Amino acid sequence: NMTRFSASSLQEYEYCPRRYFYQAVARLTLPEEAGPETVSQLPATEIGHVVHSTLEKYDGFNLEEVYGAAVREFAGGNFKLAQPARQLLDAYLDSDLFLNFASLPRTTEYAFQLPLLADQERAYVITGSVDAIIYNEDGSLSIVDYKTGQPPADGAPKVGYAYQLALYQLAVEQKFNRPVRQAALHFLQNKQAWVLPQRDYREVMTALCREIALKKDEAEFAPDLTKCAYCPYNQLCRR
Image: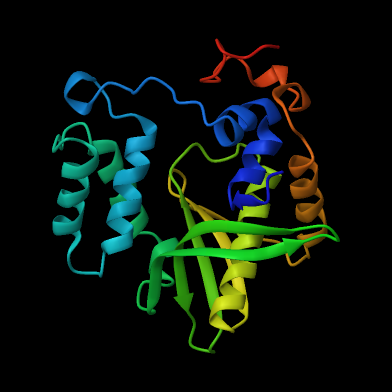
């Protein structure tokens, strides 16, 4: 029975249970993508790595240094391929979305592993890494999670994102012993924020963890057939 989940795993399960099985339960490996020296554009995942690494280490003055290190690590030093990441960074760092907290102290890439949820039979350990924890002047905290992918067309992200932020909030309040005033996603492509609603998600998240924990084999993780076209496990899936 599974009792350990990443903060983003409930989102993956909501997207497609079968894909979740291949990724988190069976832990199937996929063929590696071609390296930066053999592609004409940087994969979206690597763009995300460049952006996250830069924002993690940026102190307001060292952009060129930390961006250069990120490009060398995740783009093979190819600054031309990494240009989309630089464009996202420049626009975000110049936006009110970032400037509103730029002068405040913050902790970046805060990793945790905590038993945040439980039912009558088991406790569920949640792991995760919070992109940024902001220390507000009133003593409260704010949470920011950067998203470099396509923002939702209707402005409302999938419910799995809410679960991710809610778990971050539970973890941060437990470890820092301070209230979280706001937890938000920052979509860098359109420089818009989505703020977690003020509601308690623990019951529904615990129910999802229990549902997953009670499943034993691939057949119990039903595929969402609307998601097959671009699924990396498409050729492996026994639908």
